[in-house]
Image (cartoon, rainbow, N blue to C red):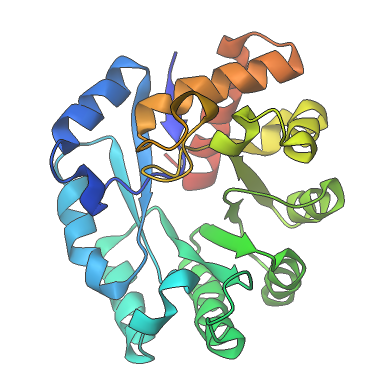
Length: 253
């Protein structure tokens, strides 16, 4: 089974002690490719170094809204320069987060809008974080136009998902769908067109129900596949094949 983890922070400090073993466990479970999105400008050099160690690791560069205090306006021009020089697979992680009260919404909008325009200009897909902000994220994607990407850890409604699909975006689902209380997400994955689905771990965060409270890692993507297969009553191999093809199409592998 060939799998792609479409969202994994393998450069995070939580993996510094055993990163090679984590990659090896991922490969043993069928996860031969991981998309590794950035969160701050300061993290870009380490992310590049980590991804250079294995051909299956693909970097994306961006400015995450939850790290807003670490961003500076000059980082936007640095991001343009970095993207032109490094040729990443995507722009991100970027987006809007209106869940955390002390993150200035207007400053978030400034950084997100600039990254939307960069993705359009560079003709790269986006990896988008949207928490309590999906309607505005959709509106801004529509206004810029000519974009593609994925809203990772999707938590919205079926109608919001349909709007994203119409705009050329996929949705990313991971550990949360393994929890039986996640009724809306589990219902969505049961009914949605499979060609718009990407699978992710968001490791080291968002562990699945089988490792609740523990460090997550990309090898756990198999549990996500099995959950989707069970919910849709389809063979796991079919889920793996389609979601892998989706990731290859979006990130142009």
